[in-house]
Image (cartoon, rainbow, N blue to C red; front, top):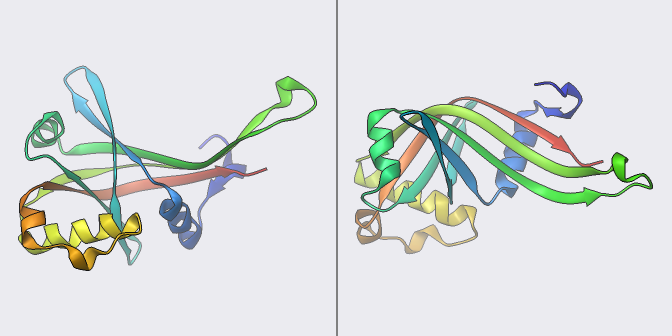
Length: 156
């Protein structure tokens, strides 16, 4: 990371920033190009490990690409606003961002799918207790087992 002064390394602070993000962009390799798709997400963070869950339709480009190559990247950001100064060339932008890589798997286990949907729903303030097996059966769940991630912020 070039700007070490903006790097966040405290686990609790990183999770706090993750909590405030509402969209995760998932990057997948498609032959000679990168396919990036914005997704709703939920996550599980325990013992220094992070897993990010996404839901999607039962077919499509995302799933096809994950079946070919499980290595993915992701990015999310929040806290955006312009920091104006007297000199326009001194303007800056407030942000908090997270970037990382990992391996994506399509979740087959019915209980884990329901659990993942509950995480996604609760991340956005919903009630995961209202979910049923029917809900889990109607979607695919992608789990990214995060291998590395970094966090950065500029709130000045």
